[in-house]
Length: 195
Image 1: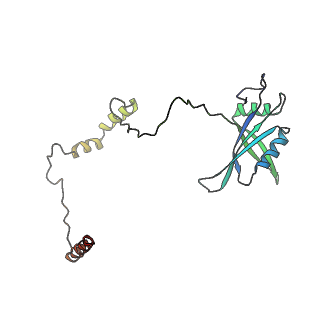
Image 2: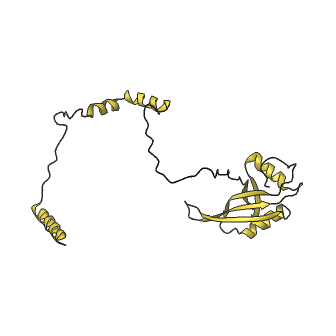
Image 3: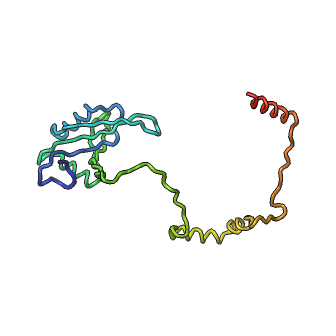
């Protein structure tokens, strides 16, 4: 049974799982265990580690999951209470030249159980198109506002209805052919077709 939420539990709890979302790449599992054992009186039962690379800097960092087996009057419960109030708590793991270095620790949230009765299969999802039937009020208001702009009038005027073209709408671009280039291209094509 793992701790879910609340202060000191009335029923016995076998474990509390904490999470460090960012630790420098040189931090080891042994370092994390030593710090948590020192702070929480040797109540660490398991530590899991995962190494990642920062996508912006390329530097490696680590994630840690720490499982504790706290007693009823353990300092873990005050720590957990602080996490619940603020969202995280800090543990100082090193002081160097008068500066404290710390980890932000959170409660590990268990994932929702997946309903095994529902079977997921790969499939292609249809593209959802916005129509007047499924448009939101904001989308409808945006369209109405656009219809009152000069850009909309220009767009409507530029549309060709039923194949009728105004004089000068289509301008043909005259291209000069270089006879030598054309002969080279034909020779290359004939050579390619013969292979």
